[in-house]
Amino acid sequence: MSDLQAISLAILQGVSELFPVSSLGHTILVPALLHWSVNRRDPTFLAFVVVLHLGTAIALVVFYRREWVALVRALVRSIMRGRLSDERDERIAWLLVVGSIPVGILGVYLESPVRNLLGSAAYASIFLMINALIMFVGEFFRKRQHEDRGKRYKRLEAMKWIEGVAVGLAQSLALLPGISRSGASIVAGLAVDLDHEDAARYSFLLATPVIGAAALIELPRLWEGGTHVIALQALYGGILAGIAAYLSVAFLTKYFQRNDLRPFGWYCLVFGALCLWLSYKGVIS
Image (cartoon, rainbow, N blue to C red; front, side, top):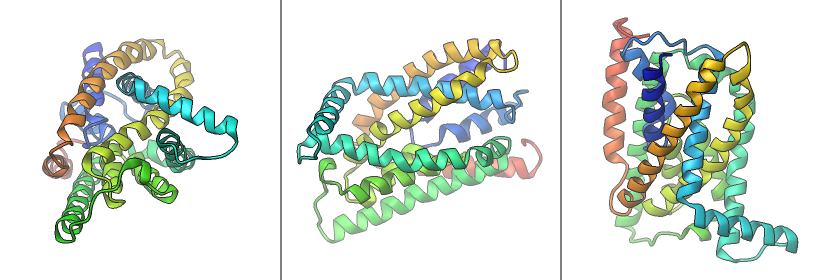
């Protein structure tokens, strides 16, 4: 990669990781559309992308710093006490723990198949269109359930443990390039009766430890095989991705107070269909 390409991918990842449009899908499709000579099958490319994710995770920690301090303190108190209570921060902290388990397990077993998919613009296009359908279906059932039946939304701390696991399992769909981590987990949050604001908040909090852990695991690969140039690009790329992610989460937390997922769904459907057609025509690969 050139430095300009690395910078562009960093900013793109920082924005698209939190917007429900799939950062991994875009890091495949955008270079393909621009005909960049980036070897997406090279192990160092995934390592570079994961370091960009680390910048995103740090941005999320900074943005939710006060909440994370309260959650970590509550988690430590419950461990020291040896039992769970109904205290709000403690429940949310343990919901984040149980919600992180599915993607951690699946990430270990699906790492190799995911690497093989990173080279295919066609697969990324198809999954991006599926991502759109997930958001459309989620919004359809949420609207029918709450407008027709007049049900009230559940607060985040009132989620059941199995519901936290279910949202975490939905987040695992983001292992497929083109499926959005935030989109899938927000839809799952809506399915267990959270409103958009709480579903997005849980999604962003849940993404932080998962993204951070994945990045730390991948970091040593940047120094394998003399890839010091990629390591340098990953360093400033991670910083730029973090800045872009911070601005993105600041926007989205306000956006989801009054808006839903459908605009992002239309974008994914149109962009995915266009890229799939270009792939079929041999323009991109």
